[in-house]
Image 1 (cartoon, one colour):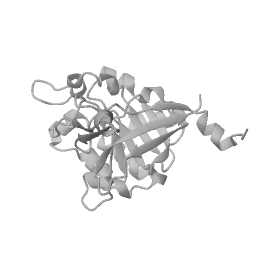
Image 2: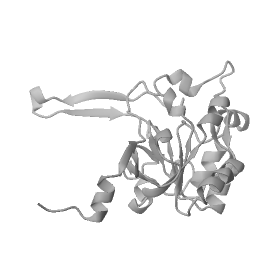
Image 3: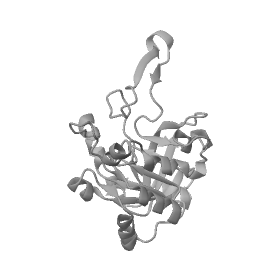
Image 4: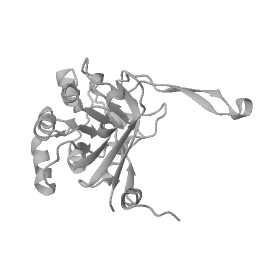
Length: 246
């Protein structure tokens, strides 16, 4: 019987954490988009195979945003190489801060406190903001968390924190559990997602609506992002998971 080599054994024995929500018409979504639609187009009984047709906006569910999603002329999903889709993963565990303040914004100080405990974030890494917001997934109203004035009270990244990660730490990608990069209050005040615009203008990508980040250690994991390789897609629903040692 053939034996696995060390590399195969290490990968196959790693703990796996699915960072992806299931996609269906009832999930939380950005207000500009309609719910997913689906229809059966072939059945085993009539056609001897089963097939469906789905219609949904490209940034639906857990998804990758390519730079061209916000920045004209920048790369689209099909131009992101596989070398960029498997990255060292750092997880900022800020669940307690968000529990105390749903409008929490990740700060440069929070990142520096993380580095004081775990070491400096390596160049070319993926940095994820773990907020526990994914636990609201089955309640779309709680996930969007609108007040009476229609303002979202949701956590996100401060612009300064994103600039620090991109310009000082030279990360390859960022991710979060919410629908938007920016905190809801900041988006309401500015009228636009300036944090998301900044990230994508730097020609790097982000992953939104991640799940289960609380189960991933702060350091030592690898993230695998699996978007469909659709030509010229600005964003696309993706399967994303983390691998780490027990």
